[in-house]
Length: 206
Image (cartoon, rainbow, N blue to C red; front, top):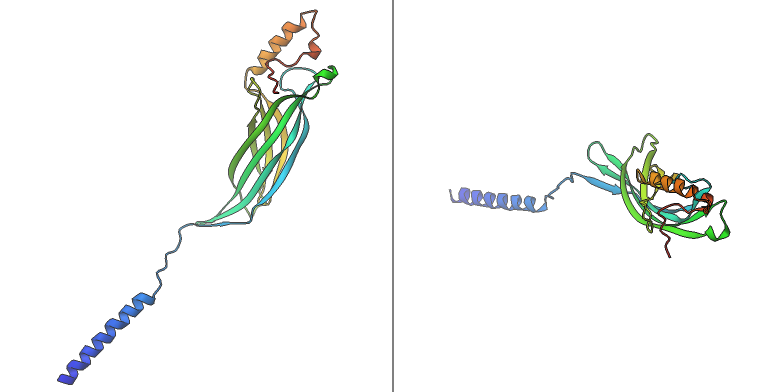
C-alpha cells in the first residue's frame, strides 16, 4: 500500500512538471491582421520648361515656367484578404513664372510675376496585375499674385513610375471676365496701345 501511494505521488509530480514545461516552451503566436510591405521607393525630377497660354483673354500674351517637380514613388502592398496595392506619391514643386508678350518691347520680358512652392502627398490604389494607368490632376497655387491663378498639372501614375502629361494656367471662375472688361476700356483710349498692356490685377514680385 505504501509503495502504491509513493508511486501515485511520483506520477503526480512528474505530470505537473511536464505540464509546466509545455506551457513555458510552447510559443504564443498571434497572427497580424494587416501586413504591410513597402517596396524600395525611387526618386526623380520632372523638369518644367514651357510656354503657357495666358488664361486671360489677351492676344499675344504668355507665361514662361521654369522649375522642377521632385517626386518620390513607393509601391505599397497591404495584405488583408484580398491584398491591396497602392502607390504612395510625394510631389515637391519649385518654379517661377515670367511674363512674355510677343509683340511688346524688350522692357516687358523676363519679368517674374509669380512663384510656385508646394508639396503634396497622395495614396493611389492601383492594380498590379492589369497594367493600370491612373490619371492624377493636381492644382498648385501661385504666390505673388492677387487673382488666384493656379498651375494645373495632370500626371499618369503606374506601379513603376509617374510622368507629367499636361500643364496649364487657370483662373478662378469670374476673374477672366474682370480682365476682359478692363481690356475693352483701355482699347477705347487713344493714348494706350492695348496690345502691349499687361494683364490686369498683376502683382509683380521683387
